[in-house]
Picture 1 (tube, helix red, strand yellow):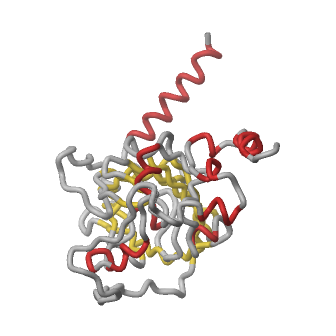
Picture 2 (cartoon, helix red, strand yellow):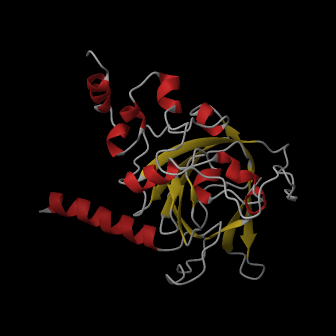
Length: 283
């Protein structure tokens, strides 16, 4: 009986520790720079149109992404649009993390994450609850954090609709994001998990790394709208279903059957390699 009760007690203690607001276990404040040691092409130059491999998207996300025209970002209302929470960690921007301390109690109220091309994002550490479902959504969402040992867990809700990849893969405003930050000496491993009941078949899990750079500064981002392309008033760049001439771009670049590039949960797993072989003519 004693052997059986030990894991139960351990689980109860762990749950109790995780449930209470905890003081910071690891210093994550300061200037950080992205380390492009994985997925560099996706994070810098961007993926090809129609390159959805390894993304657990559903039919709705696929259909919408195939209408994408990147020139939409030249519209005035898009030029100063910030990057969303679950996209900004995959880009080349550097974050600046500062703690907000209560002047009387000296308790940690929040961390503030600041990025180039984004907005101030507070991560509340004081145990406050998330707002109700009818509260307004914004680019930063509403984030709460808690320390689990030396790992910072962040839960974000109330996000505006955005994209999760620069080739138009959408993420809905019903999505929730969970992040885990782990610091090892001067490197933070930043794991982002996106749960989206509208556009994802399974959670999307991605990791990025950032290195401490105390000698850099995140510059201000005063965005000025300019006229980049002369268009008829009211025109929105788009393609109709089945008319996007670049829908096969990824398949042609990588010499793959187009079915292999269309994404879905199955494409995340090693077993899909066999499915690709089956799709190649003559094999």
